[in-house]
Image 1 (cartoon, one colour):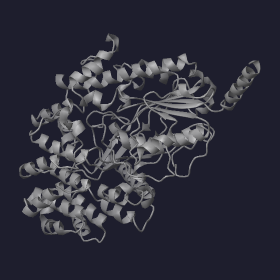
Image 2 (tube, rainbow, N blue to C red; image 1 turned 90 degrees about the vertical axis):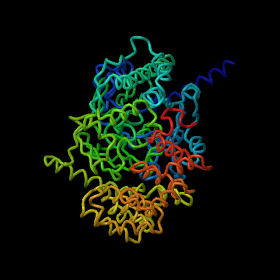
Image 3 (cartoon, helix red, strand yellow; image 1 turned 180 degrees about the horizontal axis):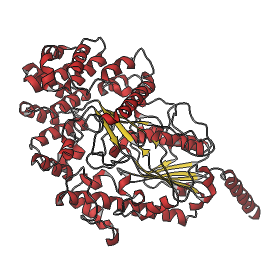
Image 4 (cartoon, rainbow, N blue to C red; image 1 turned 60 degrees about the vertical axis):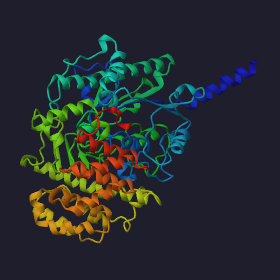
Length: 631
């Protein structure tokens, strides 16, 4: 027995010695949160003592950005290290295939002896998610944690807290919030409805304060839950050997934040805490350090793989943020936002930390677009009611109105993005520089999301979008982007070119021609009525549908009405969803009511199509606008 004990002790010593150069890593992720609602980011009304203390002893990042503005696309980049516009994973919950050689990055940590666990959210937006998750993690469940590893084995453990999720802050009924958030807080942890400054992007009113207080209290509960986790880390005597990461998956879940391609949707709180044992890994210092270095989620996978001591796979292009192999800082980032549930969109953004430039390729769709999960929220219903009652100022009203083609915000001095500087002559050079950076980044990355989702769905039946985009014969991006880069720009000269695009031999070029024309004003389009009406006979269904959407909206064309009706009933869900999105922003919805009711009840309709049907009917007050919409 004595020999066995000695051998076991020797084995533990060997394991401990081999692990000395490999830190334990605790990864704390929260949902739907922007930094301006945390005490450590300067908000005196927030109650976030645990996170604030972590920042006091660690490094706080002021320029950390999600690569997307909604959950599954953001997590797609987080877990793979590859941007969504390279993999075709930008559309929320689409589950298209990715190449077999692109792994969930914890796989590479496993190869270096790490025990890797996820507790417990996945939502990675890839095909065959079960196999992907099984390969990435030793354990992924609601019970997963560092406690099941072998003695002395280094760990990488992820804990995802959903207390700040949009469901808590706005979507679920107020009574549910009261029970599941408010009642879970002690009196001194609660934030009253009059105890914070109301952001100017929302109306100052008693009703809005009631709804917005949910944000502060949900974050307070999140902080409390994180404190409980750190107590367990301390109880297991692991704090002195563990690097702690804390961040949110994207920006705030409230209207104008989540799903929107502006700073309020992208920017996240981000803190890294280093124990004394590993403080040399931090290039920023420790114990209250603050850095304005630009980082985004593409950087996480290579950083963690490097910390574990593994080689970085060639397909990973992000930076290594810390340690001996640290990469050089960058002077700008490219970010993206695409479809969220039933609400289509396409935005590409560039930021240097001071300015945020966003290009809206479908600006006829407002920021406050119809997304059923958001539309049913009481705060959105209040905002719509205030909008119809003409109680909102011009900034607040803009949420429900068509967007400009470009945004340029001075996010250093205007954190709520209240003033668009895109047309201000004083910022002409900034605008030009960031436009150029965006164009260069899109072409360099060969952004595959400039294909309509209909096309991505078709090609994914035979190959991956990631690899498809690399073939310049199959995917002539330069030609396509030349057409897409006009979409959203308005005026007769632009419309002339877009109308000419309708004659192009490439389906996707013609698609961008008609989508661009949809964003033109009725006055401009008068001259081009014959060409647009003719395009209803286009052999490519998306061009025919787009031409019909314009022809019905502006000229009440009966053939157009029939094309839209048939498209809504299409067996292809991407065609049906596009038709429904066109209808959302059509003035005369009355002739489509019966067919939309029928489509909602048709067999084989996916969630997005059904949700869009409910939004259509809800906009006409033909169904209740409440959380029970799924039933």
